[in-house]
Length: 231
Image (cartoon, rainbow, N blue to C red; front, side, top):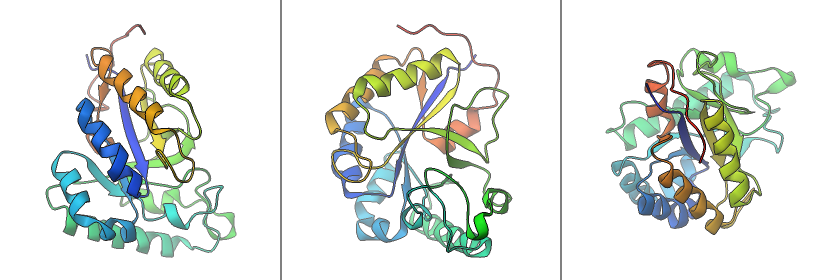
């Protein structure tokens, strides 16, 4: 039987992700998913390439920087969204050829475009693994890989983040934690709180598996997870 899974996702390929997050993940031997903004990705490609070569997933976060605070893209049509994601997919495939595939990370909140139309269905056909901006857990036999839910880590303390993981374990769920700023920046959490969360995940390795989204997706359907208790 497989263990419940936790995926750590970081939106925007921010400087703090390289300066704080990647070193902390390395310290605890954990891997994450970084949803890339193409411009910031190219600003420090050598460092991001080293992160990819060490096992982190570089995913497609091309829409994140363009969204309003509620997650919507009211100035974008479905065609514009599909074109932007496709261009970013091509860039990621070119820059990180060692990645066989990658997931998509959508802005936190509403997946709506012009005229308040939902756009998820328009991109789902060409993107088999999509982390949406909708809060929630991904439970066995109740999850669509093209509409994965996440748990936003905005302004939380370490104990609150750890509790979110504990709840996921109790539900035998795949918990996708979503971060933006770590240490500084938009929706930031404290870097020491992030370090404490990683320490808890490492300590709980007998209860949970920590894996990038694209890797977890390939394992998600491989049988019912065994029940575990929370220490």
